[in-house]
Length: 464
Image (cartoon, rainbow, N blue to C red):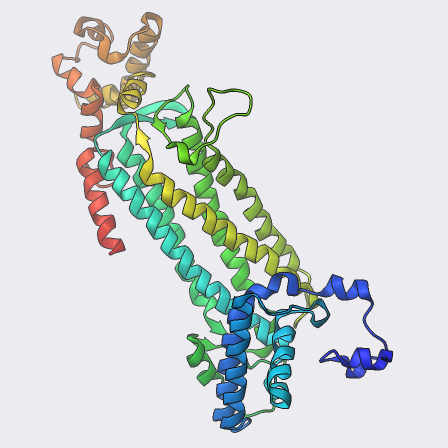
């Protein structure tokens, strides 16, 4: 076979006089990773062929041949019998070449009125739209798990922290509802991102549109897009939607990483607040007593991976002139890995969170340490006319006394507390107890058990 004949095997080979270098062929091919788009590529091609027949570019018979051929190719791929070829570069050309093998010259007509530039942009949007819907369901599953846990632990007292120092008593349920709210923002961001994903670039062709009488609105309707894109140049070169998804993913993973950090701390012997079921942990090859919280640790680690993909896509796009450039082939692997990583982490958390066992006595004991009701004593004094700054100083001295005596405020006698202020009376012990402290914060957004239950109820209504 002559070099010219080898070159002409390429769908674009007519202009070239020598074949692609073997290394360059491998270096520039994307079929190794973009073949996961096969379902969406075939779906887009079926819609495109249907539209071409409607406007008279294809006959109904040609349309039917193409659709039947594409459906047969999909069956081949899913059966594992499809032969992917690096020489055909990508998922699009592999499928198109196989279509021509199956149905002959009619297969060559499918690409009329489109380019790989708008084809791949459409495929990625179809793929990402489906994945967004799956991820949204996984976020919701995790949220429902958190609601169940929050409701179950609405009365469980634990220390709340600032600077990782004991600050004030809170309820475990209230803490879980903080995680819920973080995920709710993530879910709203995801839905907002989906709106911009669900715009169809097909019909922009290479960059300038096409001379064929295509009906882009009809194709968009067939594919479930909200509308076609407005500008052909932007259509083929835009990857904002992928960057926006990765930005969402980075925030979501940041939240999961924060959850993970707390779970790692809480499972340690120093905290001992919770127990993770064995199925979410591993042991040590040398230390037989170890039970390591590998799932949260790995989720925490994978956050850096997702953040890196966001930076990768931002960097990929920052220097590109309009319109499409080969650089954009590098958009898929970061996007695909981000999708896979987010789905895996959400599945792990969705399975793990409902199975958490809270050690209620341990959390209560920890809340008694560190003078967690000091603010309650200051509020008590203020309500009896003491200026807040004076109350702050009074309580500070009482805490210093407690540190020296190794006793909490609630463990001091009334006479000892009255050394610091004569306005203190016997009812002070109602606010110095852990339960009294959390019950007193009985307002929307507060940690009181009744407020936790009310927040859970409102959340269930929002998610219904």
